[in-house]
Image (cartoon, one colour):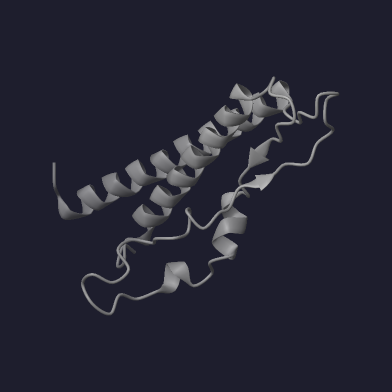
Length: 129
């Protein structure tokens, strides 16, 4: 079941993606009153992973090759979120940002829960306390 332990790498990438998204959402909130500011976001992790379909199947050919699953979460490029601009050109809607921030927090918490659960299963299987 845990022959290659990619669950740890994948859950770490999900947590990193959620953290990057949370940072962008915080930037949006901080610029809610900035004239002309356009809200930015990241594509969801599923889309990001689909854009790097071979990343989870790569094999290291030497010890320094492919440490973890680099590039999955960092491959996501931020984009300008479409929205109706205010009269000053700003597209940030605080209520929407708050809902998206909660979604990002849930994604991060879920990734950490999966990581902890897999770690507990691994510790139990090798009898480490």
